[in-house]
Amino acid sequence: MTAIVDLDGVTFAYGDTVAVSDVSLTVEEGDFLGLIGPNGSGKTTLLHLMLGLHEPDAGTVELFGRPVDEFDDGGRIGYVSQKATSRGGSMPVTVRECVTMGRFAHAGRGRLSEADRAAVADAIETVGIGDLADRLVTELSGGQKQRAYIARALASDADLLALDEPTVGVDAESRDAFYALLDDLNDDGITIILIEHDIGVVTDRANRIACINTELYHHGDTESFVESDALAEAYGATGQVVHHHH
Amino acid sequence: MSETTTPDGEETPSANARPERGLRRTIELAGIGVTGAVAVGMLGFLLLYWAQDLPVASGLYAGFRSLGRGMDAAFGTNVFRHPIMWQSMSVGVLVGVVAPLVGSFLVHREMALIGETLAHTAFAGVAIGILVNASTGWDGSLLLVALVVGILGALAVQWLTERTDAYGDVPIAIMLSGSFAVGTLIVSYGRGLTAINIEGYLFGNLAVVTAEGARLMGALSLVVVAGVALTYKQLLFITFDEQAARVAQLNVTGYNTLLVVLTAVVVVGAMQVLGVILVAAMLVVPVAAASQVARSFREATYLSVIFGQLSVLGGFAVSIGLGLPSGGSIVVTAIAVYLSTIALSGFSVTAVSAHG
View (cartoon, chains in turn orange, green):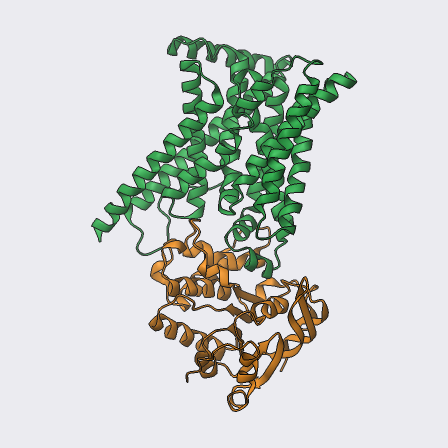
């Protein structure tokens, strides 16, 4: 087992507000990690730290065994941000153009090759939106958009998929189909880190859970999480009502 | 640029490509081809005008002049025989290509205000140029000074946007009016020293274009087209999804800086015919029109350049025909194009749904 992401004593603050405090955790190859915690608990910040979008104030972050600021193989990570799906935007970009962006890290400054185009077509088929390839992303439903972004990650041959609340605003049926797709990808060996507000979904799908509220309350396999008090402790810390449904 | 068309213009691999898509693509490529040819012709004119005293060029240049006289005779005008008019038209045509090209990324990054800001910064640059010329006796190009100040302004804007998050447009708005205020102060201080036509820079005037300014625009256009062509993929990715581009290890800050610097370059060139106040319109309006009807980003880029060119040529026709300022004529024409794309997209939406 190789560590895909390795955090050691990571702390990060926005000005005086500490968002993530002394978090150490490791994501192994093939893991499906559910990252949960109440609103404003630092989930997204922690994910950003893992991906090198923020620099930690203290502690170290390693991606694929290298310090995150030296990591340069962008094609290995597929990232779907919270903004990516909620942004309205009027930019006319087709599904094919969006998925093709996944090849840019490989193509560098050169032109795209036939192999690049084939990888794009494959990725679009894999997520089942072949008939939408020439449609504008802005015209897609929430679930279809998610698939387009996943296809972009697949096109880049990513070993790691990082998803930040990917199913906000997606209807229940598409959501189930979407998580089934994630399961399949995980079975194929792709490591997944998923931020999700619906704890039921996470405990059903993920094999590892990290529960945080600024500090790490639990990190381990899903069974031990369900039996532990970590959830109540983490959510109780901000006094929020817990909707926990299996 | 090197896009090739198959004889039937149909090469889309998608299974459900409708027949009109091939036709549409052919028309677009033809439009781009014509625009490109006109732009290259104008660059050629600038080159000949510059080198008219050299042996080979002088013959070609004479040919150009007689073509102009022929056009005047054909249209019953007194325009095309004057090299100075060709010079202005060259600048206009090149602006019509490069402004929408850069604007395609700027608009969708919601950075349209930055174009406006850089125009006002460049105005301060012109004012500084006037002052430097008057006080030191150096008779360098005002536009060159404006270019330097514009690029410095672009770097300052980039620095501001990197460091301010939610209210990023406030410091930029302050910079917009601030640099314009400084410009007006310098101009009125320097007014006694020179007799420069500052209104030309404010509202755009075909007569403001100097041979030097036109040549500068020619060179800058090549830089901008090459810059966008070489970084199209990266600019597209960053414009569409900046965070994902960062995760893919693209140098987002570097490309952002490149984009604002290219914008400053375009703005300084375009200022001559459009004027400081109207220059941002060419970055924005053709792109907005193209976004109404485009079915992909590549198509939007092509269409925005075509619409930009239509606006410039139509605007020149209005300006010359009715004796009105070029800047306003071009912008009003651009807005007319925009309104017609809205009408058109309204129609095509119903047409598509009628097809089922």
